[in-house]
Length: 306
Image (cartoon, rainbow, N blue to C red):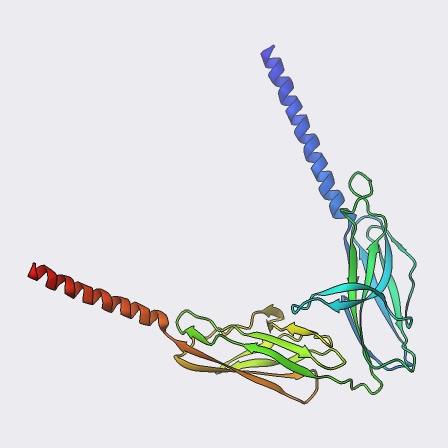
């Protein structure tokens, strides 16, 4: 009787484990299939003359479950100095034309989505920072009940410059180019902070570098939108990295120079930063050894007198 009871308990535990495992697998599979969308291109940059028309084709791919997408195009605004943005409730101008009807997209399907840009002849010469957003329709959870858990949005930014002659005003300001004032030449590091402001009426990318002795660091060519300040990292092999010197530092004065252009504008922006390097750790260690040596001598003299 006890053996049968243990057998029944074992079967119950096994069945429970199978059911539980199946439930979590179902959750994982459903969560994976619920939302898996992609859109190309991820960024569209356009300079257009008033009175002209340009059509851009986007491709939306659905690798998840069947879904209904609702498109909209709204303005975005700068959020911080890291380049993050936030969407606003302000819709794109009327000359940005697209089909606002919901799109039904089945699993594994893809579709093209057209956006037409046709600013009137009297459109002001300024930038428009927009985001094309696709929102899922009715969110569904694993129990087919309404839920905010799997509701999602996918978007792509649109940077538009309105210019009559193709030469919009671009102006930069170096807000900060900072390096450590003093470092330990043996163990310290020189890492730069670069902050640039766009004072013009059109976005641009910095094209430049930091030069320190025989070492050169390349600035990342990131978009800086008009009226904003952005912290600019460096780039190496297409990877964003911190602007940090790799070479060992000599003793004395280290002068670093920041130089960059604004896109193809011939004006060169420059600023220098100075760092002083000394072997503080070696000095402290030497003082420690000297102190120990002197204490040892004093102790010997004291022992002799005793």
